[in-house]
Image (cartoon, rainbow over all chains, first blue to last red; front, side):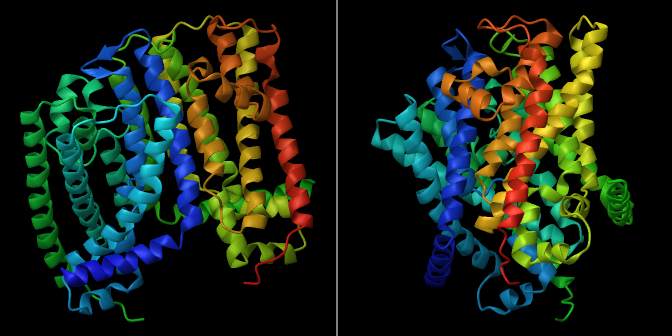
Length: 263
Length: 269
């Protein structure tokens, strides 16, 4: 646990050196949020509520999803596969620390910096420009926090798993690009899952992706009753356990066939 | 001029040959790119089940605009790969640009020939498919004038986006890092242009009219092709300003590019 925090602290320091990039990312995310909000507002038109989602909720949704881009590294995360291709993985495997936990702590540092420097400011800017939904009860805030942490764990284990493809194919970047693209639709990042047809939502719910983003959004917007919130958080927890287990099994199989090419 | 073009063709041919050297990997990448990008459009189609229109435009009408922009942006992204701000920025940082300066050929030709990302074909095909879907969903009353004007708008769009790429790349002469904010104009601009512009707030629409003249390249021509009424009274020539806006942006960008080259200082790598 202590080493985990030490590695995370180093990752935080490293991430903090990219302040200009973080700021640029923030502005870009905010601008795209405005675009997406305009599209949803135009779709709603005169209607105040569609499928349990209000216009205000839809606007808040675009802010939330833009705010978690950096936190969940939603567009790209290739650090593990890069280390496999460069051979640096050998030194990571030599460390007296579980390989999965090592990367988990790295990502914890990265995620924390992005949440504070990119996520929070986006929500703040949104609150300035729009009349957004803000949870009023402390219980709901606790649930949001839990959903955010579990969502990050699901997202990390999934990203880690995708990166492990590098053990088997020299083309893991292509695999990764496709896997990430898939997660955008199924997680409810591109459009709120509630607005999709019933059959499609049911299909999404068979996958871990809604646990990354959609759960956070719905808990935050307060569209779920307290029982549904508990069920959603438990679902997230189950996906975490399942994905972490699978990641460990795949990692074992991968390291067994790994040959470091010298250099 | 003619020899420059021959050199350009040779550079591109070498580039394409290299990429086709791994045909399976190329096919996977191209289809992958197309499929990933189509997720955005598929989401829009799915969501339209609950909404009949977006601010008075049907799904077919939006798809017309969307497909046109995707085709043009994809084509530009392929032709102007060398000016992709991310690619160009790393080229400046690593000193690759200095190498070009040493060669006895025009710089613009060399930069254009330095990269030609052929897998962008995936994006172009995605745009073509969306455009065909659009044509099957709506009845466009085609006239000879409209048929002649469509390719003009298409080429103007390519010039416009290409100009934005050149401006983004030129900025990296000073910033060295490629700046993510330029994505707002390129990727953000193309996404914003995929929807009818009257859904945006006034300040945004004004910005993309008077500062970046995007509205003359998508919205106004689309009103003409689809015979849609404009929300505000428009001069009747507004849909026909595309070539002026497109070539104008490209010419300004090339000016800025020349200015940048004159003030270029190497990073020393």
